[in-house]
Amino acid sequence: MDVVEYAEKFRRMLISRDAAAERRLIAAYKQVYVAVGAQIDALILAIAQTEEMTAGQLVRMTRYQRLMADLERELTKFSGVTQAEIAQLTRDAIRAGADDARYLTAVGLGDVKLAAMLKTLSPTAVETLLGFLAPDGPLYARLNGLPAYTAEQVSRALVEGLTLGRGPRQTARVLNALGMGLTDALRMTRTAQIWAYRESTRATYLANSDVLQGWVWYANLATACPACLAMHGTVHPLTETLNDHHNGRCVMLPLTIGSTNELAGAGEAYFRSLPEAKQKELLGPGKYDAWKGGKFAFADLATEHTDEVYGPMRSVASLATLTTP
View 1 (cartoon, helix red, strand yellow):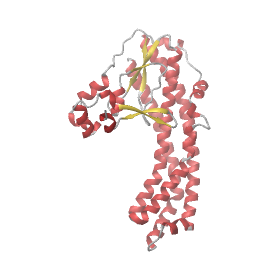
View 2 (tube, one colour):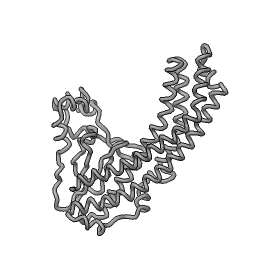
View 3 (cartoon, one colour):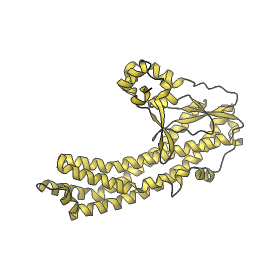
View 4 (cartoon, one colour):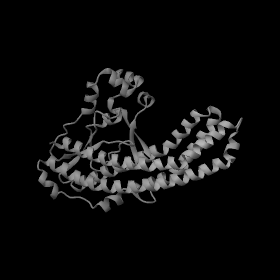
């Protein structure tokens, strides 16, 4: 196998570990539904049976106040479970990132036996470098704010249901709001894992800068968004982070000294090989027409924004940004 094939293998292994954690988190979140589900149903029924209830009357109801208190308590328990999952996943990802980086580098050098001779940092040192994993860092601050935020969304759904439709419609709105807590937790867990893996990879590449001249952005073309397609095959210095978007699965391929980047331009070439209908689906009609009309270059599809946890991250540029002189 070559470097790309090994990178795909390692990426699948990382996804497999994430899937196992996802199943555990989903099972844990079911306990939140079990704990408060009956209260939600009873409250919605009481609302439906009360004529002309106001928002003020709702929030003064003992049943409502008990639901909010119980919901925050259960969500706080779930946040603790999520934090434990993140801690374990990122520790595993740091070790895997270092091991995989050494192996990929050895493959790039033409001899897998060299992997044992390549340098690496200790997992503890890498974890220290990842500021977002600090107990008082921004990631856990965001996670700790999840119970109050989710409870607020459930409350808002209940209040809005007074005017936008009671009964089944209101139930659906409340359950959707409650489900946001799980969605957010899964996104945070997945992003923290892959970010730790990539930064451990980069730290290992840096430790072996005597044989590496940089790294190449590699995306899974079949599932990549336009921004990742635009970045696929681009070369970056060892000092630069692969700043993918949330839930992003792109990886860093080692570029050994003296070698050439065989993926140069591969992202755009792949996109151009797609049927027109698929190109429109990926970009959207307006963006597709602007690109075909030469209003922007394919590489411009990837832009940056600042995330409070991870710093600069990639996203797909808006049509307005792409076409504004």
